[in-house]
Image (cartoon, rainbow, N blue to C red; front, top):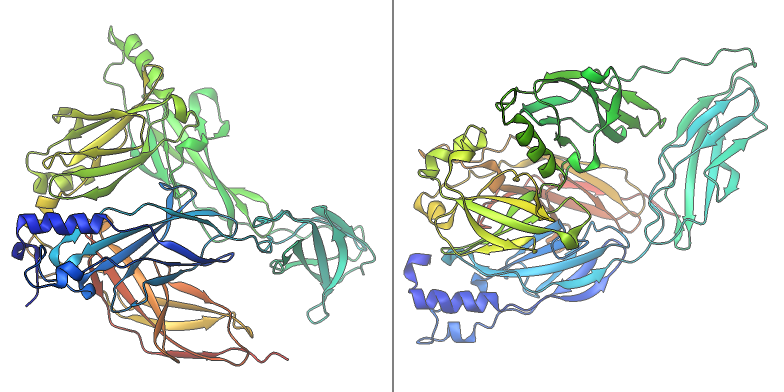
Amino acid sequence: MEANHYDIEEDEREHLTETLNGIQAPTIIRVSCREAEISWQELDTSEAAASGGPFPQIDASEFTYEIFVHEGSTNGRVATQHRCDPNGSPSCRLKITRLKPYTDYYVHIRASLPERDLYGYPSAAAYFRTLSTKPETPSPPRILECAPTWMSVSWRAPTSNGSPISSYALQIAKGKNDPFVNVYEGPNEQARVNALEPGSHYRVRVVAHNEYGSSEPSVITHVSTPVSDDQPPQPTSFIKIPPPTVLSVSAKSAKLSWTMNNDYYSAVLEICDMVRGVTYTPINQECYSHSGTSALVNGLQSNREYRFRLAATLYSTSDTHRSDYVSLRTHKDRYENSAYYQSYHNAVLEKERVPTPNHLQRIFDDANTVEIGWEYPGKDFDSVSYVVEAATLADADQQESSLDSSSLPLHELPWRVCYRGTNTMAKIDDSQVCLFRVQSIRKQIMSSWSEPLYIRRYQMRHKKSLQPAKPSACVALKFSNITWCAMDIAWRLQTAMNHVDSTTTDETTNPANITLIYELQRVDKQPIIIYSGDESEYHLENLKPVEHVQVRARAVIVDYEGKRIEGDWSPIAIACTLYHA
């Protein structure tokens, strides 16, 4: 009979929770430049397995272990996340892949009993730094100037991966079939190539070197020398950059988003205040979101026209192209032209001197407690403190949709202070509050309030249980870039994911509470999961020449509480590495 949390007495739940919270930090077994292997100690279930003991009867197969890998610090960006069931990983070992070279990582592990609805706190962090390796692939070289018998070429330094770049090799090849030859080797990022033939086509690429080896060659840049000095330069193709999209506008701010194309090396949002003339300037760096595809621009004047455009730098040519502008007008300030406008305006300016906290997120919550965290975008961490306010929605089930559409009157809610301090995390012992916001304070000057964070609390989640629909099968496994030792594998879902079972009559589950991941399994030998993550592609390496590979993929939905809903496996796809002499 399937167990659930209603079958366990309260004192037994406390004992089990204490056991889950006592899990030790994982052990780092092996570290390379892009991978690491860890192990952990299983929880002791000897007392739980004994009949008549202090716990209900539990065996090791019921425990699930979640591994969280943070980049840069213990509270840094989550680089990857894994879930291990004892049935699938009896050795309590995990190989973590797709890491960055020469980067600090912190690994936490959390134990849980999903079938009994019990989740422990994350363990202490285990630290490791990935090893240095050869440089990343440089961006395509740029042709600065081209004459009948010579050309001037420049390139950008790629990521060094922990070891300084010692030199570059500029390589050219004539026509389509001639082999590449080195025409420059040295530390500079620009070179002149002589002894070229007029009216000829050349392929140009660059390779970077450090003490660990050579990078992969860059993408090829094609260039044709003119027949004579009098030949006019070839016109460059016109690049159309899509303009940004306006998401929201208020009296003092505007939020915009845009799409990052794979051809863009970087993208900068530029603003023009029409009162000051048609002059565009880049927005402040702190306005950008963590993803780099949206920005919240504060400090605007009310009832004024602004124009925004996107300036994108291309990988292929390093040229910067700009989109058409989008125009907007900020709302009229309700205090404008009143007797108190000047004092109100000054107060707003004072607030904007302190950056507003962002990336407010839920870390953990149970029946009585919720833990939240946030980031401070400024640099003066030591002199900043924080205030967290919380509120209870009168009818959270009905108000949640209003909150998502920004129509909830936040200033009318009964906010109350629940934390003051210098930490960027807060633990709140209140089972009723579900809406949170945070403010930073420096030298008695307060920032604006952050965007509110809504958390569907423990009681709400268990009052009405919504079951996400089973994800569709993965199809169209494709192999590309096959060499004698590696290959790329890509796949996609057969149909778009439906977050909620269509048979439910309740409100729609917030998609932000559901995570879609993919698992790639190699089946030509003993079946083993070789990748688990949110990307629908994987680079399989360390293969042998003429090695046959059989793989299949599936989608897995992980809900708010870490429960998995697994899709069907795709048909098996087969490929073979190339021959290597």
